[in-house]
Length: 331
Image (tube, rainbow, N blue to C red; front, top):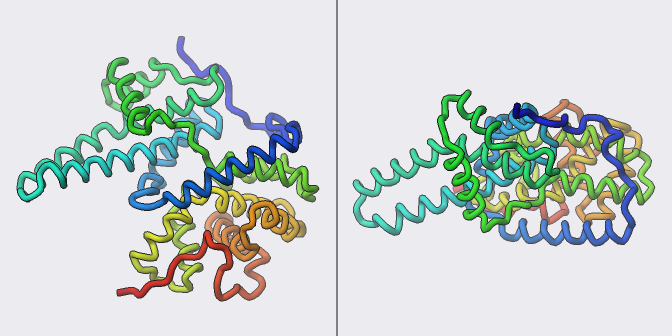
């Protein structure tokens, strides 16, 4: 009988900090920082379009049903996001290049291509979860039988060959580069560094809260980042150009990680919040005001609390480049 073989990690004791040499941590942190810088520089277009609440919730619930690690959930979201963006861009490119000049045919072809993309969306989503599971521990790989049974329960009848073809389509579309960095990797790396730097709040204590808040940020992605955009430009009605320029902030996982940890520290021990934020600023170079602003946004959209940063006057301009959206007229 096919079944999940082990439950995913739930207890704090399952995750250990302080077991890695400092030189290894420094190298890993530098590598993540370089990856993040590249992602921020390349951000644009339709990126972030498929991190919608219902999609993320579906993946989270499916991962929970299949007893997968938290890391698999985030990995699946990121794989699906990048794959669907590429698919959407390819469809737009084909409809524009191949049928330029004939609006009627182009409209019909666009409709057919869009329907094809939508009709296979659940299959693609499940394939992304299955691929993400293969990047985790080998004993947690989700078998084809499990996937096919799940799809059948939803009314989708696919064969093993079609399932394998779907996985291959995702892999080819992403040039087989599916081991994508996730915000969780940044969170856990920064927690490791905080532990070595003598942070007053234990890393293991922060870890569980960080996981919960990271789930919430994924589920409340749009309202949280909208509030950050409005705060960064000091305008309640951002222009389209400002929104497009702000995409790089949405792809900045280092910024997200420091915001998650700062918000978790405030929940765990608000008296140590300032020390944690100072440590994060020292490690990442992100301005204190930006960390406070992000943690405030996370807390107000999740538990409705204020950070110490909001109990003081807010700076007229956020100092960190990551939160600075270019100004433009609302014309």
